[in-house]
Length: 370
Figure 1 (cartoon, rainbow, N blue to C red):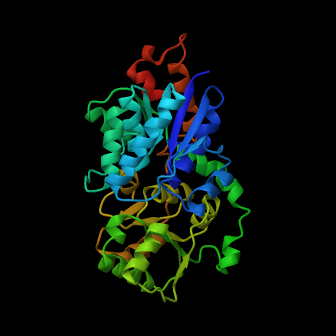
Figure 2: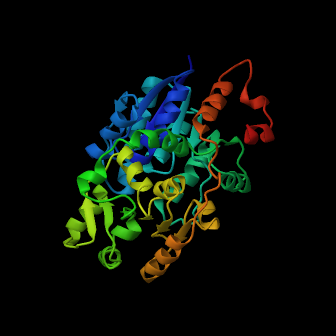
Figure 3: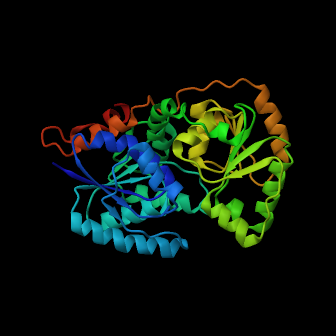
């Protein structure tokens, strides 16, 4: 049985891994390597338990650190692990340091790399995620694109081995929305459905500068609406470092929530304000309008469809955008596949390892249309 090494390390990757792992284990031996990039209990182990992801076979426990230090340590430890397990394919997800480190370690050992969520571009190279995406796509043999825009980006850059499969996060969202109906998080918070704004903030551009973070929190408080704010460990540490005291009446800071709880909070909010790429998509899946605290997004389809509104540093725009968004009825269109991206990925990888029907015999148009 062919062997796949799956490398994950951060919350979004746990979510993406869950449906894919179920599919590829039907035909492959999967070995999961957890880099430990997210090491908080609610950001890591709880996701494995809740999403029924198999326990990692290796946890190399890198933890946090500056980008160069963290990536370098990951490269060293991932390479050791790959030399030990000798996989046929290395599978990576998204755009984190774990993604790029896993891809680089594999390609230097001449192991084919499969990149799930390939082809995304914000066209802002100041974002570490953008560099991670570009490098990972460059060294990957299998590029599994979630949208046609992602396919176009890859083709414009001269890549081959592109497969339009849809978004695995959509697979996961559809499956787990049913489970989320049983959560009691709003009851515990004493807040009614559709009576709050959900917000998440974690990116360096919004948290690394005292004035930016302080102004952002003040802008949210001044909206005079109930705001539920599950706080990312990184953001919590910045608040502590800057000595920012949270003493607001409208802003409810809560500990990180599980994925199931997050889905429930998204589905029952009236609006989402975030700087997260994944939460942008989940707002669309949930049919909830979204304001993005960035000047650009890798999910350009959401902006083009009027679903997502970018505000960048112009925080004064937020009240007016909210008023407009809540007045307009939103209709979602199928932008992210049919909810079976994981099955398509497993099919392609299985075909690639079969002597009877190798992927190399498929034309590019066949690869893009399956």
